[in-house]
Length: 279
Image (cartoon, rainbow, N blue to C red; front, side, top):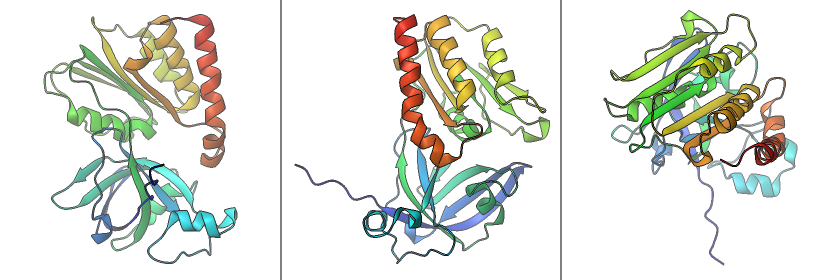
């Protein structure tokens, strides 16, 4: 049996931060700890940030496998997955964008308080999606949590690519500049107190799709993702291999709870589709 590759932990230092909108924070990381870091050729490449429990420190360099082997589970770091918004191999700088909702959660408050020189340990990268340059058109759909991956995908598209982009955010102040060629249409949807994803599902359902084969990316809160998967797979007949779709998070469930329940959630959806469609 081949020897399993050891998971490398990178110790990255904060270079600078920027508040892009009231609820979106950009953090640029760098330093010698990112030596050897190279995201795969995916526009949804992601890293897992390591947040130790309060009062817990680990020997340097951090060894995640040794931690899991030698320490009780309540002393393991909590992991949070974030998209690689950009990677500059010339400067060795990694850009990550965080949705911030006050003191709630781990990563958002960390980003809000991050200062140059602060260190964050991370695993990765991983990834699975990049826009297919041979498809007829692209569909990109998501809430704030998917915005960095949508932005990275738009950066990759040829200037003449046909794309329909639907992004739901809290309100007008949360809109940001995205790359868009003349055949790309970006629709911003404002939640303004409504349930996450309600406006998004309605907009995609009402949209007139261009002719030809689509390559779709749909990510965000799990409830609306499930509705849109049903819409695209069953009603629109989009083949599964032309669809990157997943719930990044779920209302009312913390990250650990969502990760543990997600496999069952996926199996339920697959069973539903097997009983209602053969596309």
